Amino acid sequence: MSARKVRARIFQALMIFSLAVSMGVLTWLLISTFIDGVPALDSKLFTNPPSSVPEEAGARPAILATLYIAVLVLLFSVPIGVGTALYMEEYARKERWYNRFLEVNIQNLAAVPAIVYGILGLAFIVRGIGVGRVLLAGALILTLVVLPTVIIASREALRAVPDSIRQGGYALGATKWQVISRQVLPASIPGIATGSILALSRAVGETAPLLLIGALTYVAFDPTILGPFTALPVQIYTWVKLPDAGFQALAAAAIMVLLAIVLGMNALAIFLRSKFRQRW
Amino acid sequence: MATPAGSAVPAVAPLSLRSSRKHYGEKVIQALLGLCALVSIVTTLGIVISLLVPALEFFAEVSPVDFLTGTTWAPLFDPASFGAIPLLVGTLSVTFWALLVAIPFGLGSAIYLSEYASPRRQAVLKPMLEILAGIPTVVYGYFALTAVTPLLRSMGLQVEIFNVLAGGLVMGVMLIPTIASLSEDAMAAVPQGLRDGAYGLGADKLQVSTRVIVPAAMSGIIASFVLGVSRAVGETMIVLIAVGQQAKLTFNPLEGVSTLTAFIGATGNGDLPTGSTEYKTIFAVGLTLFVITLVMNIISIRLVRKYREVYD
Image 1 (cartoon, rainbow over the protein chains, first blue to last red):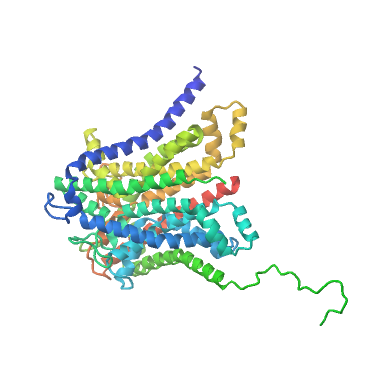
Image 2: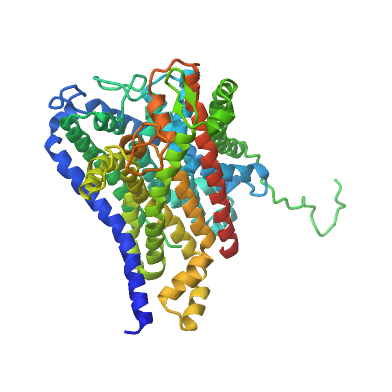
């Protein structure tokens, strides 16, 4: 083999290795969490409230709160996100300065650290404009965190619908909203659904903003929308901080539950995207 | 009648292309969609106001010069000291170790996906990277603390239980998908003609990748690095769990430090009296964090626009 070929082989091996690093760490993470968590993964985790005794402690209030939050974030973020995407793709005239500002603004919001959204929540709750340190406040803040993701994914889905579909609708005398609601939106639903599920899985795993709006509390009862709450990732953080080995195992078991939810959503999104991929 | 009798052409109003009916509903819908878009603008305004107002009050009590140049961070002590250098150095230190992992492996993954992998392999590997990107950061924090730190110790490194190295390395793995997918986008946008031209001149894949594709996609690749920095600076949970919450001025990766985000996360959930200087510190640190990431994000957005303009 010539030196050149050897170099090419080594380079290719290095590129494969860099991908393998991610896959290897992912596998290691899953296996080590599994080993730590399995002993504590029992029905008490789903039925009991947190406790100072690791053998008795569960994450029922946290798991329920996370499910409530997921539903609320979905209800808030999809209509607003899709609405914004429709405005930007179908209505906004790009040459207007405020529309260009909107575009840059959303790209920036997508990269603002989640904890800054927590500060936003803290400021408005503490200053008395908001609703207090309750589950609804958590859902609202997480909605803002994931909104840019929903908008960006929905815009891509709308952009993928070819203009000929719109022109065809107009030629038949449809109004703009008729074209959008009966042709463009139905065609882009798979893309919007994929993006929304991915955004939702991010909201479910997000911890930092919830710390700031006071989710780091002991909640022994089933949560309500307007009551104090703790979410599953926050419960994990609480347990990780405790030195007792029993709580470390609980943290690992709760991580398995969280990963099952989050990775399940990811898998669903990837499946939807490949199943409904449309070629025009 | 205006038309004279016997005229061959009957009078017809000129054809109007405008809709014969006024569609008020259409206007309402457009207004509603505009209102949705306004939510994002209001969010940004809300963030700026909620950070700026308490931060300005804070800087009325503590000189901004002391804040940005002081080397002792002890806001909850008496006497309090508000020098943010230890937090900034801690942030920088964690970011450095994260990028040391994320840049080579992220870029390598991107080159492999864009230039080497067959479409079928891409269809398998890209979702796997997405899964890595979907893992919650609290999980990465737990992994750094309970798996990576013990491994570092068993390798003979004298790391403290909370240390920069484990958190930074794990954060690097977390950032690989960000850098890989953005860089891969930029490489995929390089016109096929450039590749074909280079292959036609006898180049092999190594040469095409490193001398044609990477330079041609450079602005997008740099954008991915900058966004990686922004995400590393803003990452909270990994630091809070595995790097520690003790503000020390050190670059030593074997020790624990605090960062901008870890301070906010650890202090913001306490029961600090509203309106106290300590309470306002959260907002001053938050503003610093926001400004740093804003600058990074704008650089990154500009760079992405640059390659889109050239190739799209």
